[in-house]
Image 1 (cartoon, rainbow, N blue to C red):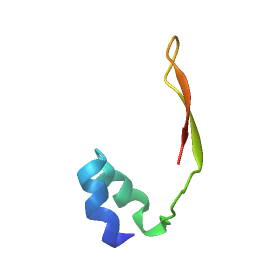
Image 2: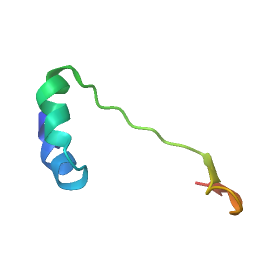
Image 3: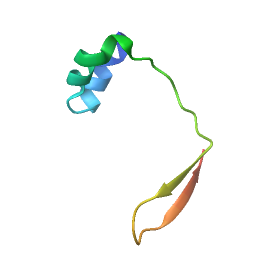
Image 4: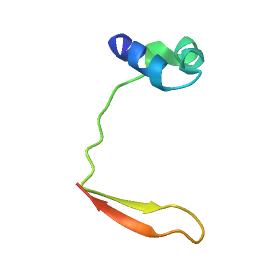
Amino acid sequence: MPELLPLYLQTVPNYQQVWDAIGPTLTVFELIPEQIYVDAGLGQKKEILQF
């Protein structure tokens, strides 16, 4: 996880606070979805994205 920290700090606001609190206990994993159901909100189109 320490090697990924710079990437998180660039893209996630206030991530340093999370890292300082629980960083050593974090585990990295990857999700590889085949499809995702997207509900953009009330009155918006709902879609299924295929990968």
